[in-house]
Structure formats: structure tokens, C-alpha cells
Length: 234
Ligand code: FE
Image 1 (cartoon, rainbow, N blue to C red):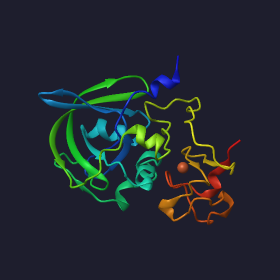
Image 2: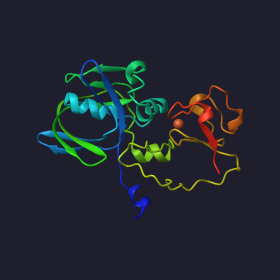
Image 3: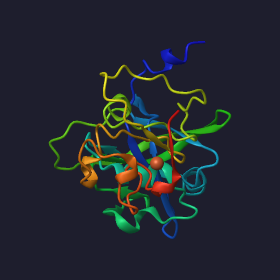
């Protein structure tokens, strides 16, 4: 089996949210797809271990926020790599409670949908929730939607372990231009690699900054892990 073949499939990236009024949570999903047009229905795959999976099963509703291409890394880190069982993810972001009761993320979002579950399919590690669209809208944003390919290749993101597309073998390395051999460091939590040649411009770290010279309070731009969670690549 070729793992590389799996990387030829294209996906978008979304924040799928659910809640019952008291509790709410959301996670980054790349497996959101429209399955029928009339009535308009989507399918969303959700790992059974995810808190959001539990909430969708209980509430029977979910929201989909379509992320824009330049969505903030810390937003993706918050929704993609933190557990809603320990962090209230909506505390620091802009959202509203939708008609269905599901939270709709409004930051870095191009468009949103609210769905009511009409079919639930157990597919092993994940549940597939087919939902009928009950509300949708667009938000003013000129950026294109974020694709999984852009996230991997430009933003250097990796799949969280609960993603249906997570592959436990090392992801194939992309060809990179030859650079000075400055040591790279990778995050133990999310796999993000700090490349000194690129720096971390979003955090004001200029290209050429060695990992050792990063401020002590610097943290992973993807998942927010502390600098101490990084180890040198072999
Ligand atoms: Fe990380």
C-alpha cells in the first residue's frame, strides 16, 4: 500500500462544532463533504474519542465553519490539538450559538452551516454523521478556503492523531530547497517543525533564528505547546 497515494486526495479544513446549550466543543476536521443536494446534506467523520463526537451524539446537531486560507495557526492549534474535556475552546474566540444550539465559529471563517443529524453510521474508529442543513451563511472574507494540501505544504501542519487521515508512519518529506544545515526541532505534541531558516514570522521571529535563541516563552505556533516540548530532529 502506498501512503503517498493518500496524500493525493484533496480536502478542505473546517471547524465542526456541537453543543447542547450548556456544553459545547469543536474540532478541526478535513472530512466534511456534501453528500446530497436535495435535501442538502453533509457528512462529517468524527473520532469516537473526541468530546465533540459525544456532543453530536447527544444533541443531534453540528455546525461547520469553513476556514479561510490564512487561518491563524493558534486557532488551528486550539481546535485541532487541544481536548475540549480540559479546555473550553470557545472562551477566547468569536462565535455565536446557532439556531440549532451548536456553536458557530466566526473567526477566520468564510461560510458556515448548521446541520441536524439524520443518520449516524459507525465506521469503526469514527462515527459518520449525516446531517441535513437547516441554516447557512457567508461571512465577509476575501481569502480562499483553506485546503489540507495548503495546510501541509505551506503552513507545515500535520494531522492530529484522531483525524481519519492520520497515518502512523512518518509523513513523506516534501522536496525542499537546499539550505544551510541549521538544526530543526519538532513539537512532540503536534509534529510541527521549527525551521530556523524560516523562523516564525507570525510570532515576530525572523528567518535565521536558531531554536536555542528563541525566547523562553516562545511556544508552538500550531498547538501552543511550550518550547520544552520540542526536540532536535535527527
Ligand atoms: Fe505543536
